[in-house]
Image (cartoon, rainbow, N blue to C red; front, side, top):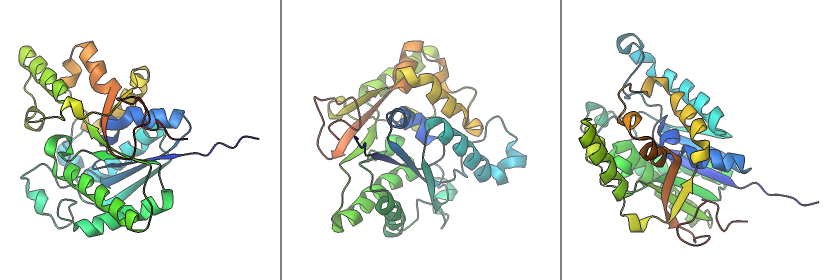
Length: 273
């Protein structure tokens, strides 16, 4: 009898909906390939914008709403375990909520890292994924998630354990330029945080995962986050080809570990048995 050992993909995200937008493809791919998928979410997204819902009446319940949306999304993406780090959404850069003592942004890094280290010890994932150092678009909680993940891995390294691979989600600089140009030509006003994105230099990308055949399921996972669906979302007006590139192909930079094949790899599990 041949025994197949299940390997684990563990992702660290800041808010509900980040997981499907940025990494829904690799999560689905890992699930379909028989891997265990574990999602750690730092906050419940209390400071998120509210769309398609009554902001005045439901704002106090937004955390609960987003938790329920996340549960539905996780079911679509094949998540085996989802945990919260237990911090409050810090809001966008410069918001008063940045200074809330409960916020992820203000949390002592050592405390946040130890909370994450607890799950890392339990799961011992083969692959860990979080944001690049720029937090994709500079959100305080994305930056803190990056810092927390690396600090937690340092804790585990001191205990003589490391995952086989650590990846940082990356948006190629060439793609950022293309999106901004499409928006300009179409007369679409990009949100400031997206308009100011720099992206990762293309030559730093080590791994490109094409999940365009899973695009319908990834989009269904995004749609589960009803409160976050902006009716004028710029990506919704993109040309079909650019839309598929934006959502169907996810790119990463290998931060720890060894490439499992010719660069760019086509799987986060490339080279792992």
